[in-house]
Length: 279
Image (cartoon, rainbow, N blue to C red; front, side, top):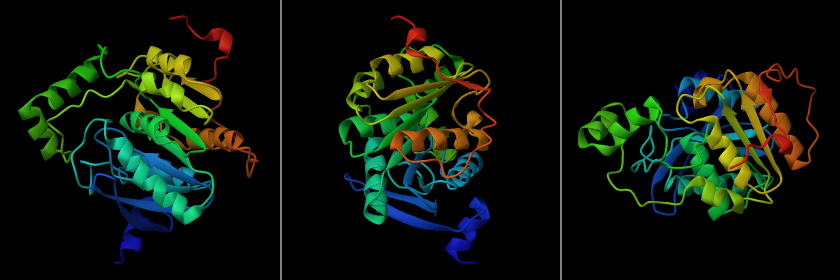
């Protein structure tokens, strides 16, 4: 069976593989599918682009976009070591450059959790985008008291934990360069439109993380909150894909190609400026 046929089995649509090298010479692999403006889809920690929920999100978004989904360094079939969102902005940059060369039209990045950190860092440090979406993304590297984050810390901070991660398919870096917090960089994204999506029931990162990013971001910006969303992949649904497509097209100044049913509207709220919590 051909590689395209194998990819189509996973994505349910015609899809083609790609490979790129980052600025620091890490080989990344991914899949492109769909038509329309290019959208680079960035999974989270312990994800990969063929993981069922990520693949389903890529397929849903491909109704409106040419989706470039890929494996971050240290994940899946890509090379290198995972740096938890630090150097992953170089991965985003490599795929964005490919999408720009192939499509030469507005470029959108969508990042989930660690992928959200990566797209914020990329937009702030490299730019060249037309819209950025960060889902379930923390504003800070530290200061999280949830049990879920503490479990991840135990895995990433110990040799035994990193060995276990390797057995589970994720290769972790042993070094940490102490990069800027996402909230310290998010203000540099403007005037590129930024959309933040967060679950009020996120068991990794409190809702306040989304507000911290929102307060520091420049205009134009949107904050979309959901009461029953969970964290990262938990909230990836066709309804969210449709709603995001509508918001992104609006940010790009493009008409939505068809009237969506928008079944996720009742779950997501977009607080106005008067509802922003004080620091």
